[in-house]
Length: 203
Ligand SMILES: [Fe+2]
Image 1 (cartoon, rainbow, N blue to C red):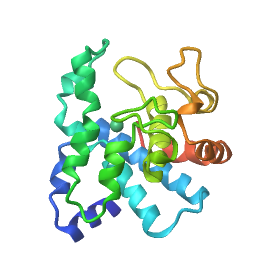
Image 2 (cartoon, rainbow, N blue to C red; image 1 turned 60 degrees about the vertical axis):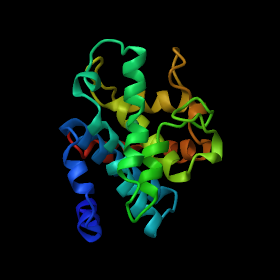
Image 3 (cartoon, helix red, strand yellow; image 1 turned 60 degrees about the horizontal axis):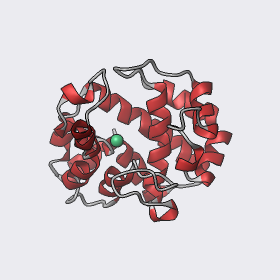
């Protein structure tokens, strides 16, 4: 597998960090990587950038290894302090990956919850100030989160999840303005391939 090979080549401590992730987060990350591969291919992103984006997908939530599972799996609303802690997985992940030979995984770990309209975290970056790789992983991550079962709700089927990304929902929690419009457009064109990629990794 690409990730394992990279770890061996670099001789870093990343594989140890990866092993700390819970089963659900590892499956989620593999699903995001499968989607990112399809999206890169449909964006004509190839070579080292494509490889780095796929590697970053596997590692984007590595900071969650430091968050207590009682909080990650909590069925009720998080307190403000718990939410702050969960959101810190971005900075923790970037810290874990800071000495990697590639810079993109650390950047993606830090920026994959930033939103195109500035409503994301940790820094509320907007538009193209969010690194491209993080925008790609951000939209793949959002689709996977909608499809997956969570402790507090059941996952959506493909078309309702796609609809929520493309057109948002009544609550305003999901808004197309959160995503790079160019990426949303490509996602709309290759959505069947992305659905198949997501479903290739068992829940
Ligand atoms: Fe995350």
